[in-house]
Image (cartoon, rainbow, N blue to C red; front, side, top):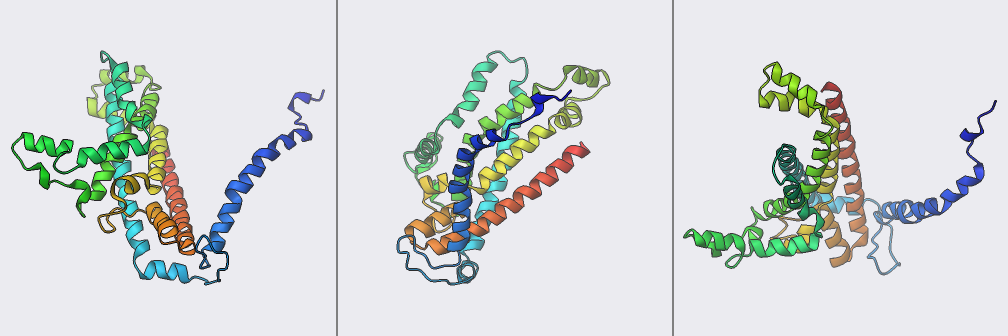
Length: 295
């Protein structure tokens, strides 16, 4: 007897058309436009533009804009991934114990993730403010001169300063995902490890980490993508400065497109960014999936 419950009526495919149309209009078409404008001198306003071939890409490489932006973005992404995952996993491990008031601490840890980037950026701008900010006040309290400490104004410290802000805001989400993974670990395995004489460190590295390897992969990929798309704090806190110290790929694209009104050049940089992000994401997925199998 034929099982009619498995038959999918063809007319139901029509219900997919609205979503498919939105996907094409707001994703596929802009992608093709991006590649098209990257080989023109379009300024974003006047449609009387010319075809310039790969000149935009040559300019980006020759003037150092692309190299500087990629360098800052890779540093940003690397430190955000490392910092967010280490802090998130450490807090998750601490809050996965029989700690009194752990629900309260979990809520407090996750709260920064609930604030918008604009709010977080302005709050931390006052924390970093030389002379009257929280860090300067603490230094003054211990007899130092806080007015000389300007973390977001220093060429060598500005990028690190906004990375710290991103880690502070993002570790709560990472912590929740790790906490969910840790709660799936069978306690009988932990007890068996203790009976066999495993130390706390060995239980962590040889039992818990392999069992939450898929959770680690999810968190790292999410943080890599977020780090490569970094824009908010460069825009809100430093405006890309001092100099080009915090010019990430996304901020540079914004600056070229809307401040310099060179949409063609910005599109060329977007194409390069698109390729770089896709390549890094695929590489990380393959690497982490291989590690999961090894674990």
